Image 1 (cartoon, rainbow, N blue to C red):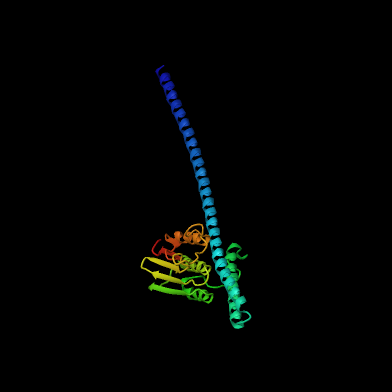
Image 2 (tube, helix red, strand yellow):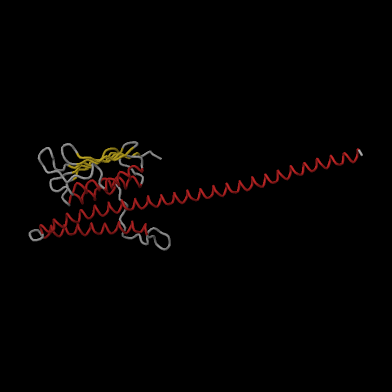
Length: 276
């Protein structure tokens, strides 16, 4: 009897142990399924984040290309219009000057096509995956090292420009170099549109930790009775200047564009050079 009693107790203990082990196994399986589900959901979220980041990068690149196209077309077409008008005025009386002006129109047109090919090559890369099918004939990337030819073109178009460089010129990061060049280009293009009697000053300062670019144009003086140019939507609110402000902000800098009290316009940008 006692032996049989102990046998039943052992069976009961064993049954309880088996039931506990079964519940533990079920809990482990459930936990494993929950873990796999969590891993799958996390992977889905990461994929969504990657897709969102890729979409944002595409939008940013399209905005950059749109800004580049605006700069190129606005600058070169403005020069072409001014030069063509000058050629028409002196065609009969000064044929050599007219021919020189038409040569400038041709050069501006070629520059426009060259830069457009470069940018469109980014939108439609070659079949082998390279950015551009051909490199021959493409102009160098705009930079402050090419500031002199830019100034000469504006001077030839009738806009006297004085350039001042302070500090020790040195190589700049590519994006900052292009942005500084575009600031000067856009500001001088706007000054050229104001008409006769406008002069401009370009100041580039290389400081230890930042680059400063400033473009002043005299413009008609409201205080002296001159007729002011047609007002824009707001100071610095033109499409070109908005694009430049966005470019400068990318590098942690700031751009200020406003009318000068004595007449004319001022565009000033400060771009850090030691920002990671």
